[in-house]
Image (cartoon, rainbow, N blue to C red; front, side):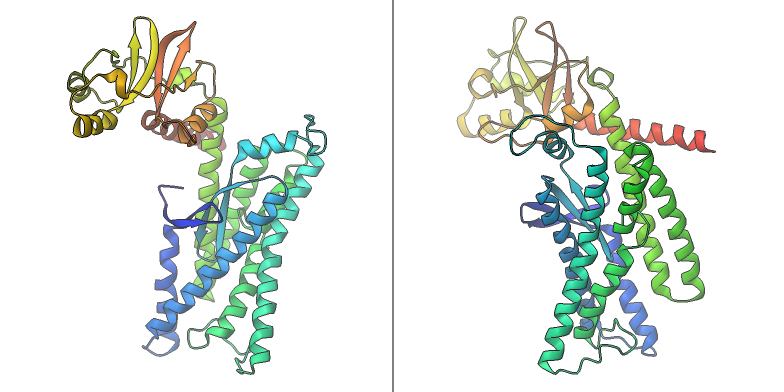
Length: 392
């Protein structure tokens, strides 16, 4: 997600990111307008049309976010692509809510039938929101008596933005009902597949079907409407995004911390001066250091914290500025556990980008965010290559 999208802000507490493929849309709209008008284009109108499409996609995903909250699913981020979007949910919180009954707070596993029915309901919310916005916009335009020629072809045109607003929402609703994952229709397909197989296998099958549909759309667009080619590219990009997320999730769930932890690492003493600590840090690739007194780990400190303390307070001791809040794990913990600890901001305590791996109260390794992300990327690529070899 972070590699292929850029952050643009937060909305209702959710990180909003734009996928890099979205920037193909302004070029495509301008090129289409240029050809349709015999070598001239309305640059301002084209940008306004792109803005309308972006707003419609955002409204579509907001519908999913609010509907998901009714089921206890909390969105972490939404990625906006051309003509669609992908919402990323906090799976750990969703799983917890699935097990807890709101009335008696007793842990009860939710039946599988309810889970796939929930997925279908969530998927249908997006198209319903888009159609509702289309009807609302059409009603306002008609009542205002602007004569937007709602049924005149082409429906999407920079010179008629009111009509484009209506049809952009209609197109979004229809497009997202295609059985191509991660579009809403693809999520419905995955929900049906998940009735007879596990979620991972169902997702892989849905992604394979999506890739095939994308190829057909791109090929059809070469001989008919260029918009089909654009839709095919979008579907293919979204499917690849979901496939990579699936591989990463598999790595998170199945790989143990002991397989990626660093066993050759530097430590500091609480009695070290900040200048001595900085000298040691210069000769290490680590950004964060365990602070050890004898056989006990008493804190952690980052390279940046050492620099900040030297600038503001002058030379002192590591003990005075170290973070005494320690994130610890055991070697059998999953990478998912480590990833949550490293990426969750804890209120009231200093956040650290290091986890200490202990055994019998003895420090045996460390996991840093940098080495975790690096290891996850390599493991994910390795698993993808093995799966491709098995499929061929």
